Length: 142
Length: 414
Image (tube, rainbow over all chains, first blue to last red):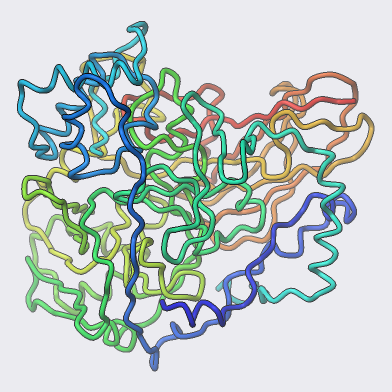
């Protein structure tokens, strides 16, 4: 989809504000079923496909300094730092589990002898004391 | 089917003015926990839930940034109050692997169907559109880990609030018709789907998912080339993606370019080892519980949400207020949405909005009048036609999958 095509699309639905709902009692908001736009190019025979070219933004997030932070360059091969920085605080064991998942399941090129250093670094910047159940084996694959 | 129910999104000037005029009254229910810290920061209601609202992703409006690369973008929850179809430019985004093609040329794109078939075929996009009967369905696409941020104890992963879901009118062709064109041979067990995305290192398993052959040929699973009447945004899988109504989004392979019919069980990482759930009701276990049988995640569960009342809202006692939201039945139609004004002691049936099909979001609404001052806990519960109801207690599993607990909001009567 190119920019010009988007520009000719109908006006987007604006948020239905509560005030209207209050004023209108129990009537359904008028935009409830407004969507999708008319069958345009995708209505079967005759459809014309356009080449799509986009640019994806790059991350400006950086790992904070600290002992072991130099290893995080290995993390950045596959994903931006924000994924790590937005995790809930994890125990040291949970961080070890996450790092080993990246190594074993996804092939992160991180030597075994750097796992503890990296885990301690991540625990330092975003850790919690161990209490309650372990969550190290998450099985979710990402 | 539902097409006739859709109205144009064109708004008259009067409509726009009327809606703008509602701003003042909207303040009555103010006090959101999703505090805007600044113009572009949103605080999701869990630890480390600060998220930037970004607008710099292609073909996307304002989205909550979970991860830049590969992109994880959450739909801000207010969008779900605007209507039961999620606009393409606000539809959540979830990629596993960072090598995502940023240019797709329809002139060279091919969808390959091969493996345990009589005649491998290679389809252009025009052939897909012109040579197969079009098929349409409204269906919710929900990430397996939607709402993971609310798990207690917390689990690692994409830390979503409730916005890793969306509902769209999908148009395309039935997978069954495409498989029939290639001719599935006797002994086929599964069908495996692969998209154009790949990992950055050669060691990273390519993202592929499989469905049982009977599921793949059920006439509902489809290859979509349009979403809400427009081509898919690239980040939602342009030019085509798999649509698996009623099943979690991990199966809805994006930028689908390869379909392989298998005569032996798929042992690839993403099907065999990832996206596994405990084989228990609601995929629920006790934290730390060991020795539970694990199975691939599959059918969705019913869910319902408030869209016009938020936690901390202040409401006038004795005044009638319409409370509304959205709900869906999961792997089958919604039967009922029940609302409780008193933390689950009494339940009343909500009125349901137009039906766009059993896999779609549906709006619900009840008139509410708070009887007394002070705190009130409102609850909403969906029940589907198979009798599955949202549970009172939240499930827990180590992957943070399949949350569907009854939703509640606390309001203050004044």
